[in-house]
Amino acid sequence: MTRNAQGSPFAPHTDAETAAMLAAVGVDDEEDLFDIPEGVRFDGEFDIPAHSERAVRRSVRGTLAENDDLTEFLGRGHYAHYVPSLVDDIARRQEFLTSYTQYQPEVAQGFLQALFEYQSVLVELTGLDVANCSMYDAATALGEAATLSQRVRSVSGDRVLVPDRLREGKRAVLDQYARGPGLSVETYPTVEGTVDVAGLQEAVDEDVAMVYAESPAVTGCIEERLDAVGDVAAANDALFVLGSDPVALALLERPADVGADVVVGEASVLGLGTAYGMGMGMFVTREEYLRQVPGRLVGAGEDATGRRAYTLTLQTREQHIRKERATSNICTNQAWLALRAAIHAALLGPDGLVELAEECVRLPRDLAARLDDIDGVRAPTFDRHHFREFQAHTDQPATAVADDLADAGYAVHVVGDHRLQVCVTDANAPAVDGFVAAVEEVA
Image 1 (cartoon, rainbow, N blue to C red):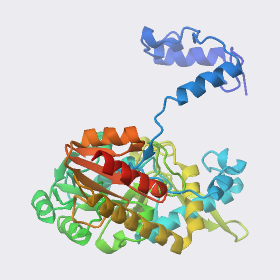
Image 2: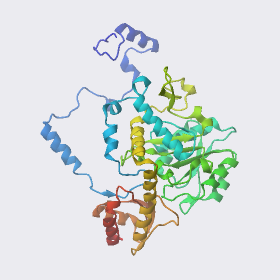
Image 3: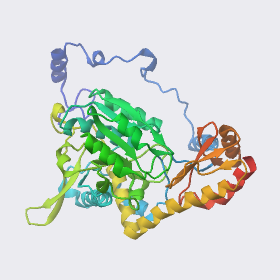
Image 4: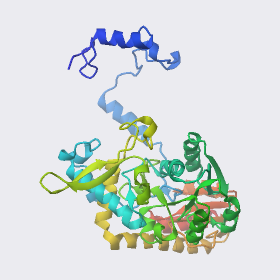
């Protein structure tokens, strides 16, 4: 490898080669290729005074001490479950932690097998045929499903229907994805936290390419009529996309049994814990859409000696094939997070996963009953079964109640003038007694 004028082994072009390339694009030097405003240009100085190690530690410790020390009863798409220490111990092995994408199967069989098992878990939980490995988060998985609807639908249609209670951030990501293929994202009504099937029926016509529903919904409600939603989508030749997660799917009816074509959601509920915005999206679909799946898949085959072997396959993204033939521009495949999810699922086993899911029904049910006994609180707001979280009505303004709870050391979501949303899992269950006492004091 030839070093350039600066001596870097990572930029191998000679001065003559660089000059030829610049001449070909009609500029004098590399600076002309970029338009960087003066205000953000690097002038060679960071203007950061030098400090000793002790001073840096003291400064960082002081900054971190400014964080609020709150016990979180927050949900709405991001959930914490206890992650066994063995997940960290295995995932931090150097062959996993330092690995890049597993392009070389001959040196990555262990990692590839774990990713294959991750895909297999999702396939078993959903009843569908193909899971990819993997997506950025649930929002980008939903966006990829919307673009998929344009590649697999047999008739024309450019409308995507989502529930009117779709979480704001997820809707914003979907809107961004919809701009490229020119999709129109519209809403259909919900009632008591779940799909208004009659309202959905009125909203659907032959121009609808995709219908999206969630179970559990953003309200925490378990959708009771998914089969009816699937029937409406099928009758109008629309792709039926269901949002869920692996823990919930261990207990709820299989998406394949209610007509779902694609399942998306947060697989980070296994192996990751609270990550403050970071996630790992899952994407599972029917075999007939195999070659339209975004990102990458791990496949199983045989090596030259007939032994079972794993390899990345169907890498239908623009880094690997011609851009116009790519199904997505996903780069990072979240492989290390998928590894953690696979380890966590294996540790729980089928029975443990079901027990965790059952706990996610029992805990919010019991907490809602205790809050409902408090004067000034009615819980849950919706007469539905709930998973992990529920909404509660407060006679006092919800913002004031939430602020007082924060002063007492607890964080909840404000979702209306007189409505809070409360999430409880095995991770914060030990704090429930104190939380109930705090609500009783401030409500």
